[in-house]
Amino acid sequence: MAHPKHRHSHSRSRKRRAHDALPTESLSVCPNCREMKRPHRVCPHCGFYKGKQIVEVKEEE
Image (cartoon, rainbow, N blue to C red; front, side, top):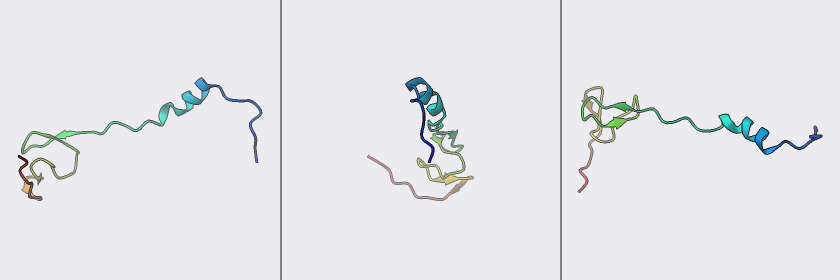
């Protein structure tokens, strides 16, 4: 097995890990209720998808 000959510095390790962060979640506007939702999914606020009621949403009080 290969063994490192020299220690990597903090900055070198962090440069390598700069691309490991999770991307931000993309959002789109629901055409029915105008709330933000994830694309290609049922709206969690109104339950509509592509103009049709898919899920019955409970009213929170």
